Image (spheres, rainbow, N blue to C red):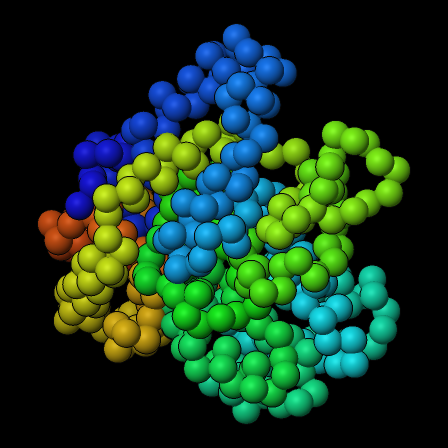
Length: 392
């Protein structure tokens, strides 16, 4: 679909965009411009003359269009962990008489860690209740303050029904937070129609903005002017350059800013988002399903050692396919050596992402052939492939 617009190393088939997207070709020139023409020539004037100060809001608008958010509801900056903390702290403050946070075992661990840390800091008797994905609906009742879920399970690719769960939680009086890290840029999202109070996500996966790229946060417009930011950073102040000694939250989504934005990383994100200006997310979704279905068929027909743990129904999974195999880490390392990049998640999950922006059916067929070769010839059994690296 847009393969020519990405840097893809010769001989590599990249099935790991669900972890880190590849480099858009335009990003290098955009970064160079920011460094040389803006930082280099403008120096501190760049905050005004190059628009650095307004990047978090302007880029937020562009991401908002990809996730079905109304104008003025998305802010970019900081990390996903920080944005989850902001959303959760604000959500708990909205339900002061409730103490239960419901999440599931498929949630990304950083969300759970941030919840645990916030609970400890508040020290008001809050409880994080983590249940299996299939039990989330039953866990929602009038005692729940917040429902905190990742829409797409990072291990299996299982896709939550955002609409149904949001409606169920809100009917019980709970506040809803969705983590869209494995959704944004992978599948259609309708925050305006679904109406959760909060959502957050990262930009370095399917949005291809590079390692360490900033996160985003969405706040529903009817509540944004009343929430009190727990992280009251100076750029979330209504008038940061008045240098008041006391915090006063900014207007609307501006109050969800915290610290100084990473201008260099923001410039890469801008270039990465340019690709989406004339790309249909519905078309991306349709092609992603087509590619993943082909991969499953080719692998399952020849690799009985691998067990599909992603939902078989493509409408019930995100843009990744996962297989379980006891020696999954070694198998992935052997596959990478042969030019096909997937990744591994403990204890036994082999993950493969399918991004039609830079993948096609020929890539999928060749990747499947190479995976079959690794499995049938037990290439994973070589000792070198079992040595764990820092990042799996």
